[in-house]
Length: 340
Image 1 (tube, one colour):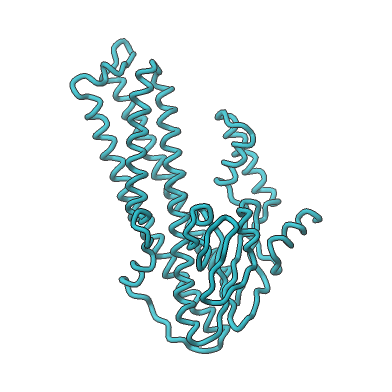
Image 2: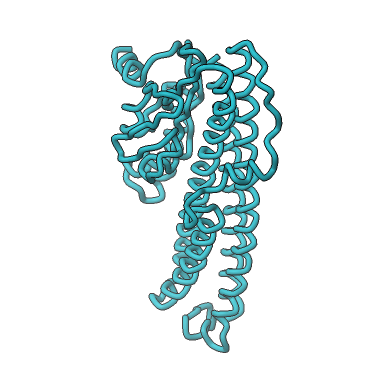
């Protein structure tokens, strides 16, 4: 039973990872077009191949260029909003329906589940905190990127920098915004994923006894607070209390940024007290993963990062493969890795 819940989580996490790759492609395309526009500014407004802010600012040129950039970035974020909303709906519905099958199979009873209505889905995935709704978050991120690009160009020119230096400024700002967008997609997708399981379990609880258990991801990236929560079982309507300060009904729903942002943990419902037999882990010793990780670290170090900075960044970009192991707590898993 619980193995199936883990398999559902893996399937849904893979969809989030695909969405992150799509976001990377969107921002890579935008960066390419921003750098082309920057080169056109030099082509149109430079004197003796040198562009100053005074020259760019004549005749309202800078504002016109920034209006073009702002419009392009606005279109990107409209697409981003649609894509993340679609991801959230998929995460909710897939987990709701797939978890339903697990509960019915384990309880050996039909529970009369059906497809949730569009209104129920929208209400379920909407963040109850107004300032943290997806449109508000993306609006702030969009405005921040436009401001950063404007600053990159104006300050770069005022400092006497050439095309390459300003291009590097824009490259860093765009990469930073892509990271923020990926974080939003993962955080909101994960929250919707967990909410789908909770809502299906709420209906199933009318037919069978359910308890819920915190299910962490077995790898070195799991935050310390969630390693300690791993395996914690509470009553169906109970709450989890995190050492990081959050209190909530499930991972991703702790109403605390230190717990919720980029959380990859899941909630597993135990039908009639039956505990898991197997669970997912990340194979960080996998040689292919280690090679990809080493290559990415080397790349980031060549960009000027320290080894520690490069390793931290690379581990966010390169994911170790999943494997299924006999059920054990995070502490048991960690000890087994050390003693090997």
